[in-house]
Image (cartoon, rainbow, N blue to C red; front, side, top):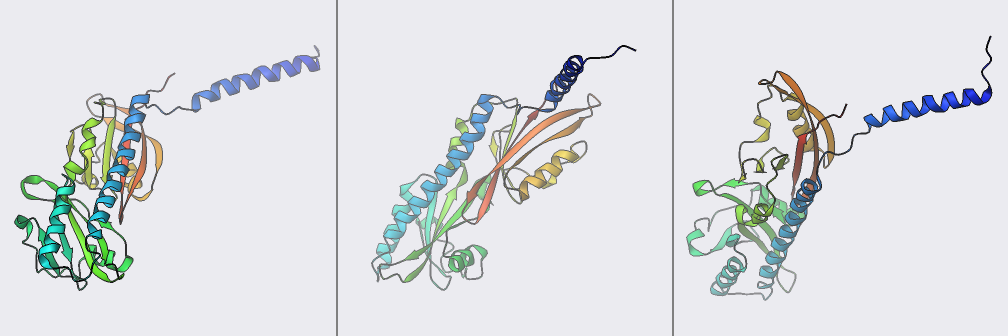
Length: 279
């Protein structure tokens, strides 16, 4: 019987282990997004935060007008109008009284809500109870325009609660930086709320759309489940399969998502692309 030396045995083990490591490397799959795609992903998050910070700062500046106690209605309305003129994405400014009544709204074409009792509304109660700003979910306005309300508590110089400042926002103008994103046909980039409300889809280039929870699951069951998971988890990534009926076969995809924190809610950025496996 031929006896194998310890040296030969050691070399054999090295060769076997090298083969295992080399084959195992195929299991370590790199993120398939290009530099440009990852940059778009990051840019959407950074610019969304910057715009929200700008909105908060603008609202804070408006609230400073209300510091002196005993301001007349005329002065109050002029301050609200100045808030509208501060940014092009602000359509109107209003002041809700401490008891929840909408006192004043400017400009005059938006005064219809004046006198309404908002004391039981979710948005008013959130600001009053938590003493924090709040931004509403998307609202469908006239002619399909997407709107949101941003609300912030107001105090005067004596630290007396004056009420709640509300800004009506044109979401398209608030998120106008989306048009700066490069045309990325190789990926699907979504911005949506945690209830599935779609805010932006780069494939359509439009704001708004059907709720993502109404997606047709035929052949896309894994994607539907992944989007539901993204609604409940702040960040993550996963591989999944889509069945293409035209080609009668499955295609593998990779998805990644992260969170944009907002006052009182969260937005998710979700990006996915087809992932080709190298044999």
